[in-house]
Amino acid sequence: MTGEKIRELAQQITLVENSASGSTELLASMPTPSAHIVGITGPPGVGKSTSTSALITQLRSEGKSIAVLAVDPSSTFSKGALLGDRIRMQDHALDSGVFIRSLASRGHLGGLTGTIYSVLKVISAAGFDLIIIETVGVGQSEIEIAKMADTSIVIAAPGAGDGIQAAKAGILEIADIFAVNKADRPGADSTVRELKGMLSMASGAQSSPIWETPVIPTIATDGSGFVELSAAISQHHDYLVDHGLLERKRIGRIRESLLARTMNDLALQAQEIEFQRDIAGQCATGKLSEDEACDLIRNAIKAGQ
Image 1: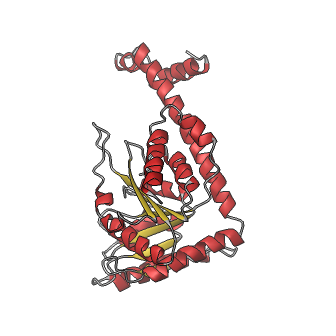
Image 2: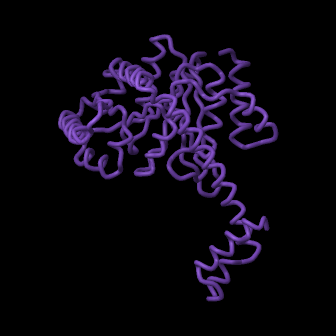
Image 3: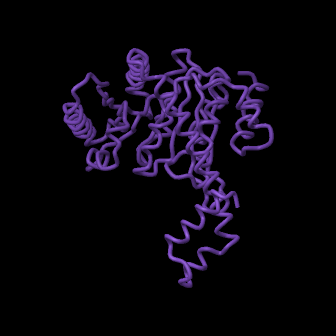
């Protein structure tokens, strides 16, 4: 992309992220996202950003154009973000085939921003082959990434209990690919075996043919394993197409966006009603029970007050 095109894309993302004037018309003019969307998640400290950078290097060697959305934690007070993930990807800053954008989570639960679908729509319209979403890494609510990505990659690292924690967090269900990063460290082989064993038990309960989740050892610092990781991403995309699942994924993204926007609008209305009528204060003094307060807010929303 030219510098002018990059600036235009950045401005469009800012427009829709802030729901500014003109964003509705812009989004209405754009088609449903068609780029292959890859989500990268995992607990803090496993090397998600370094792995993302190594994956970009591999994909670029294959001639693919890449956009990266790095979702950073926000300050509870300022809503700003550290943007640390972007700092770790400076090797690609001058590559015209790579676009990197950090998005602040702005307090949105689940590690993804509330406007993620709109941003994906804008970036896909720019013609990138793949869009990578790298999430905050906030634990169990990382499952939200599966609702937005076509292919979900979970990064793990050697360490006791990784597999058990993955099962507890529901990560086994959302991972289309596991990458065990820092595979040169002690314990990596056992982590790979543990994950493969748990995945084997999970797939054994399925009666119909399913995608067999690969577990790929990687070393992000030297690029080892990323040829295999890139191949697995392509294979998973082909699997989705062959089984008619890609369109289902894309419809699911739209559904999640519609529900999220509707729920946000209702939450704002409820907040305004509560503030205007001091409903929480009435609960605190015993004038209203919490059930009565909720009914009052619901009825006020229905009445358009």
